[in-house]
Length: 162
Image 1: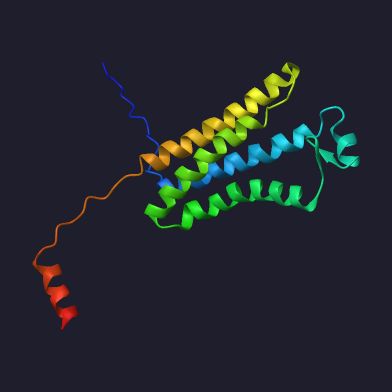
Image 2: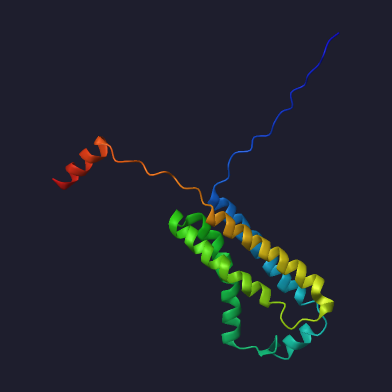
């Protein structure tokens, strides 16, 4: 009697750097953020309001459009900044920006009717989950233990002083 045992080929699962996780989360957030705004245009009356020069009861103006651009540009910049900033600044920036965008995302549902609750509930819910992931990833950023100074580093410091 022969017993066959087949060892499965396990997929390699290398660790993903925190910077890549943050950039991926901000990228996902941006896609969702933009598509929610795009799908919002399909609500009855929205296009008519745009043609009349009104967005969310605000008159369309250079100031309004600049503020709207800034609200989209910040998460877009976070994709790049998450990959390029030094760890300490990166962590702090992600914690601050993600913390500020949670209430900002929730306010998007203000004044909407309950008929649109599934749309806004799903979109805001996913945005908040992505922002929570960003906060958690930045908060739990792995730390490298400090290496105590040994004779080699002491010698280097003395050489620099001379």
